[in-house]
Amino acid sequence: MRVDEKTAIAAFLAVLASLVLAACGGKSSPPPPPSGPFSDASLKGQYAFSMSGVDLSGAFFVRVGSFSADGSGNILSGLEDVMDLSSGEGPAQISITGGTYQIEANGRGSITLNTASGGLLVNLMMQSASNGFIIEVDLNATTSGTFNLQTPSDFAASALGHPYVFGLFGVSFLSQKAAPIAMAGQITGDGNGNITGGVMDTNDGNVGTPSGATAVTPGTYALDTNGNGTNFGRGMMTFNGRTYAFYIVDATQFKMVEEDSLGGSAGEALEQSSAIPTENAQINGGFVYLVSGESILGSQGPVTRVARFTADGAGGLSAITLDDNNDGGNTHISQGGNISAATYAMDSANPGSGRGSFTFKASGYEPFSDVFYLRSPTAGVTLETSKGVIATGPFYAQAAGPFTLSASAGNYVANWSGVQLGSTTIVPFAEDFVGQYTLANSNSSNITGFADYVDLGLSTKTVFTNVGLAGTFTVNGDGTANNHYKFALSGSPSVTVNFQAYFVNSEKILLVCSDSGRNFAGTINQQ
Image 1 (cartoon, rainbow, N blue to C red):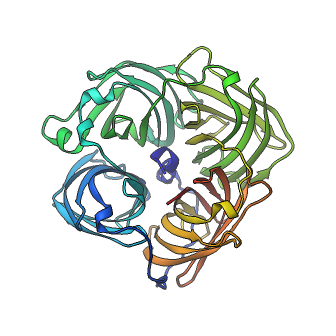
Image 2: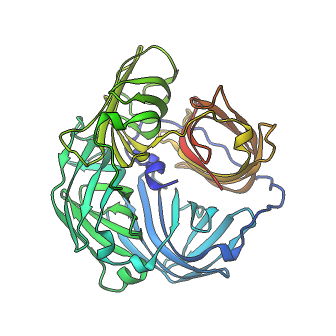
């Protein structure tokens, strides 16, 4: 899952004061010994990572950085940027001086990253030797995200001479007031240290109204000249009055964290292909999207939505299914009918930007509306512009169905983040999860595996590592609309979490929790 898939769900925790939590804890039972193709040798090279969540006070917290692994269980070096919006001290650069790691056969890894202040403990879930999910397990914060193998030969300004689509989520400061913010758009680098232009949309809870398409003010970027640029791919970038630290994965991707007085946000940018749709006729077929963020209407609360629709190539939408978990408005929607005013349009005023929009009305609810930016004909980022909702996430063309249980057999890795809701304290209980499971039998819906997850509240913080994971996966109809996952996590007490699941293709599934006491969103990728 990329950072735009993670969508920095936990950022809204920094501005909530009226939600409540219910926690679970206790010792867990270990799953059976793992099997699979992974070992310490699987983690070898330089990796960029990005993790977002909350600190012990519930404030937005981000880690973005790079570390080098030798393939034999040793961390050689690294660097991270840490943004903690509760500290009041601004961003910090922290050197990673070494460390150790261990990778199990099923791809689960544990890493100690040594720093001058003591170190950072993280666990990995490897999708492959070049990428996967990462979670912080030292209980100093709850954060999770992704890691990607870097290409050090691309640690140069010349590598960023392309157009990129980005998605960011975080917290905005205005007159000392904190509110959620989401941004998405396209920028173009010239390979010589200049951001030459682009277009973007901003949905800032401190402003109240989405900006619409806004021309990107030209800016600059540069890799660090103190060795951090050539060693870790780190640099600084400015555009539209905001400043970002970035870490290059390769010429097609870099991870970002905002570091200025306007607030803090995090995400990533991905190279935009030259074959971007420019007209409605090129948007044809099924699409799936996931957003997560916050409602700012009435009592603020978390929002997660997953949906699919069919575009007809002429500006119309049909076959719309949406699952919405809006705990701010206390509503849960699973709606396949009673849809009207369903349209989409590519942005003719900004041709070549990949920008478009769609909207539809579900009976009894405010219209659902979004802006999207395509980085290819089949993938992009979505920015929610519905009334009172600040959210962002991924947007994909859906592969042709049907999707079947028998075709889904195999090994998968998963990541979700969000909050539990209850009645005992005024701050939500944040949770980050990574796991691996197997659907071994194409004739059975049963899944088995393991998980690591962290629960963090004001008075309670617990890490569960290598706990047993079981459950079922139910495919409905041809699988193109909503399906159902039930994950049962061993522990004391045990925990069961239900999700509505939407296929992007046979290798990627988007999730929104359907439990009334939880608000989670995430992604499952085939291992």
